[in-house]
Amino acid sequence: MHPKPRKDDYPSDMRLGVLDIGSNTVHLIVVDAYARARPDPIADERSVVRLMQYLESDGSINSDGVRELERAARKASVFSQKNKVEATIGIVTSAIREATNGPEVLERLEKIAGTKFGILSGHEEAELTYFAARRWHGWAAGRIMVLDIGGGSFEVSLGIDEEPEFVASVPLGAGRLTKDFLKNDPPRASELVMLRREIERELEPLAEALAELPKPDHVVATSKTFRSLARLAGNRISVVGPEERRRMTRSDLGNWVGRIARIPAASRVELPGITPERTYQIVAGAEVAHLAMKMLKVKRLEICPWALREGVLLDRIDSFEAMPRESGLDLSNLG
Image (cartoon, rainbow, N blue to C red):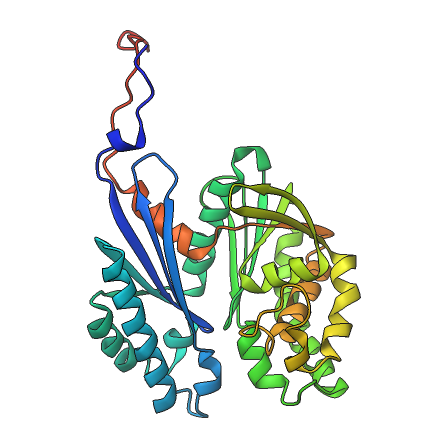
């Protein structure tokens, strides 16, 4: 029997970066990637932009928002060079995808970052996030449902293989809902009523469709919003390397939803898990999370540390030419 190949033996290894321009942050992750091995994290860098605050009534990103994006792209480019990234995969999601001047803004960012950006649809976001969650939790998790709250959209996916059998994306991102419904800080009761009605209206068709499919064996959630809420309302169940595993029940989250809505944004940062960049939109995020768990009949979920960016990386790594398996067994006569 030959020894198991080490990472250093794998072909097509390279230092990869994924530059994700989202609705809330511009985030670059850097990994060393090897065929048939999990990516090895090297570094990451993020800039908080909160792009929703720079959207005009005609749907365009205003000049201040474009400047913030350019600043973040330059910062990511310098960070990439410093960490000797060999190839960068650029992705953009709902905020730029839906902006009326999105193509012009994206062209400027591509020149600064020195890479082309792929514009992901909501369904593609959900599929790649599901793929990452499936790889993280493995086949033993059975049929999984994946929930993801972004700045501009909310995605749900369900399946038992590496490609989901059900995917949906709806405009229930925490940043979008905060901008459209929560004008006061803390929000008024009437604003919360209207917000909940909108969330329920968008989730009702998803709930009906999922009710016709087999129930999941395991429900997981990704995104910074869910991670923040799990630190606030959930429980730590273990630590795997650098990753903290947390679980959150619907009842525990329900105990916090109303409470955080009564606290001003400046004071929410004193709560566990609520960071300055999330404090303004955590109320809307909590409402989406709680109502999604209620309407989709989810009693508890586990936080998955891998999400869209990891899904993009894994998809790229799978395209590497795999190293032939070495074995002391002669299998040529089988079959």
